[in-house]
Image 1 (cartoon, one colour):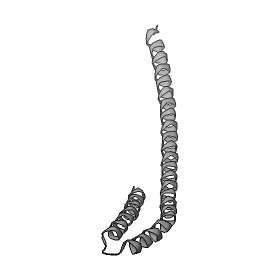
Image 2: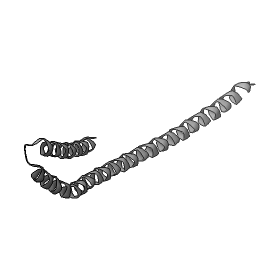
Image 3: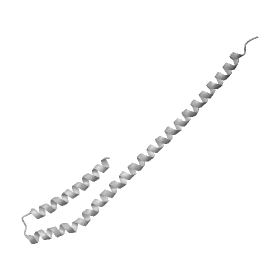
Image 4: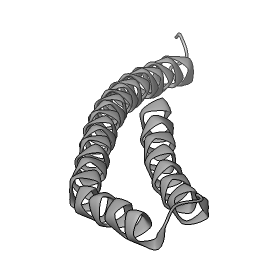
Length: 116
């Protein structure tokens, strides 16, 4: 979860920095020519910024995918163990019931025979 938050934070930080830089350029007391030159330099830097942001998002997505896969594998393993334990307990219970039924049948057979 913290990996996701750090990716969102980093993306927000980059977006905020870009917006702040552009706002600063537009509000700064410069001549139109200087402002256009600065905007051109900033625009030239945008593809690199977008690539950095894309890379960051991809890294975060890979981490999320890996974590989800790991959690899924752990859940499946716990489920397999629980099913195996349930099957084992059911088999033991059936064996106990069979023994009890067998014992009851043999006990009831002896009780019906009267000594002579």
